[in-house]
Length: 237
Length: 105
Image 1 (tube, each protein chain N blue to C red):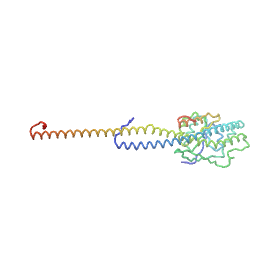
Image 2: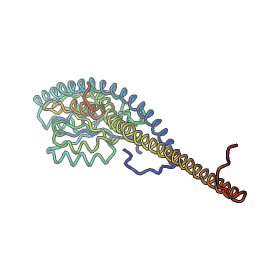
Image 3: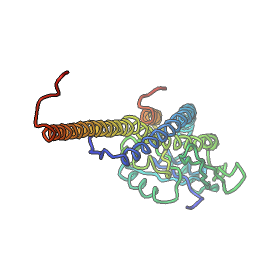
Image 4: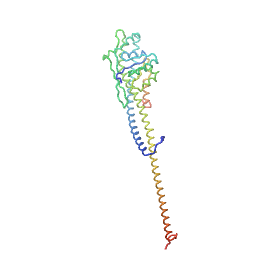
């Protein structure tokens, strides 16, 4: 699988071993991160589901009471009643760090503390249903804000989990096996080189011995010649 | 980073009118086109949360997806006057699928 060409050198081997170690460590850490994120995410989602069901139900109730109110009042009168709000809401956002995901937390302040300020109209000219509807909406709003916070957190965490999961998989199935393969290749290549060096040395040694023997033999022959001229082997007595 | 944000409500007039009394900023929209351009406009301003009715959201999914991974605004779907389309729940399911790879809840 070694798709890229690697130099079978000791230096490369050391480098790859370091890389493998880092990759394995990173893989372990990211896996832990993914598991923990997943745990938190599932908790968030469970909370989110309950919250959303609640909010949707409440909002439908609010809508229906608004419908009743608009049936009892003219559209213009209702618009007029709601046109100039007394209350205004400011939101401050802080961040909570959940496993390196920045999750927003919303805190809201109303301009005035009086809860009655959500009614921006005089009670004389409007119907009672409108009061009920607005009051109910004021109650739902708390949950709506919590819903916003939870839902955004879930979205951001989902994104982060997806990213982390990809990284974990890339390390697990691509980087680590490839590095191991390369390390194996280099080790084998180096071993092979070692063996071939050994064989060559043995061969050279053989050749040298052969040569030495040859020389010895030539020397003996010369000595015999100089001594008696007889080329025969020493006779047995 | 400005630390003080506002909350916007975007939707058809009848659905969002009541939020005005609470002090939220209300953007009534008559058509999807208008809602779309309003959404892009307010996304650039200091709105941390945008509540959007599902009736509009159903027809501008691409625009919403653009802000999904951003920190602000958080676009939260709420049922409009005509009732819930179940999109909010579907979105939760989608993000679970995105994270886990399958819907496990």
